[in-house]
Image (cartoon, rainbow, N blue to C red; front, side, top):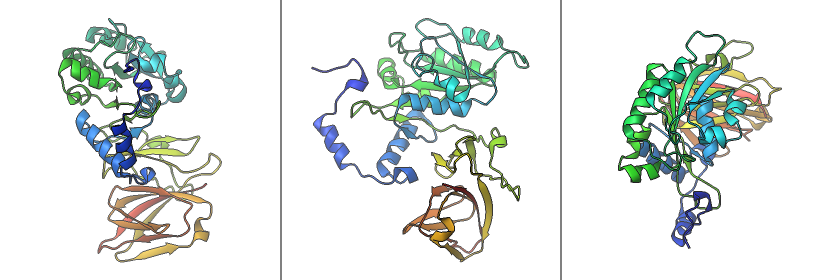
Amino acid sequence: MVNLYSDTQTRPTPEMRAAIAAAEVGDEQRGADPTVLALEERVAALLGHEAAVFLPSGTMCNEIAIRLHIRPGGDEILLGRETHPLRFEGGAPAALSGAVMTVVDGEAGMFTPGALDAAIREHPAGDRYAPRPRLVCVEQPTNMGGGRVWPLEQVEAVVEVARSHGLRTHLDGARLMNAVVASGVEAASWAGRFDSALLRTLTCFDEVQAIILPSLREERAATYSPFLPIHPRTGVVMQAPVLERDLTGGAILWRDPATGYLRTQVFNRPDHPIEIIKVELPARQRVTLPASSYAHIRQAVWVQAGALVIIEGGVRYALGTGDCLGFGPPAEVTFANETAATCTYIVALARS
């Protein structure tokens, strides 16, 4: 019997198991797993986005996207009735992002451009008593709406209304490939117009899903500039392209400018401040720091200009302008500039 009740109940075929067993693997935490990178690149191209990140669940994917779009202090998400972020994610948009969720009614969860426009105008800009409209979420195809496929023209018009009001857009495309098959419209035509989107691939083991979240297509450091870490003594601001920083947990999420991939690094515990140091390493110079210097230190390095080689734990990492690397506590670490030009990099240090 073939079970099509839910993709969380499917089982892998022998061919799938063989492919998994033979897959080339690496350190995914450092962005060095070739299979994961290939999957991210393939899906980013499929969905018409610059880059993608592999995540273990659809809920996680939606919530990371929402967290990146929503700002502190009363932002509003407009979405269809019975959609996944509203009904099946434990109130996470409110709990994790502080978002207000407003339902835009429409047949089978598919609201019209007119209905969206009216909902946005209910909370006009400058109304200090109302939440700020910020994000429009579309679920394609609908889940509790019976698997209905939004017409492409309706999606285009909804996104255009959002754009006209300066709002961001997110596509919950967990079952997007079903819509592709049913409509004959390629995935990029649906997803490429949104600021972020997710795609779930076929489940292989129990409830492990492959979720791809294409990166946001604009720089967000300016938006979140109040959250950039600042050196407590020198006042030097870390100029890395930070997308978000968790002030309580000391976690920073950024987009690697060199690859477009989203990266994350936990720097410190809440009771230990982050220390930011700007370093200019002359041409053909290297600095080796013994293990005693970093006995209880975690660090992240962002190359502001030039090229830098970091040797940590016997592993060599070559970084170019815009590249980021997090590690520690290391046994010994060497920073080397092997070029003829000065290398400038930023180091974030925190006790682990």
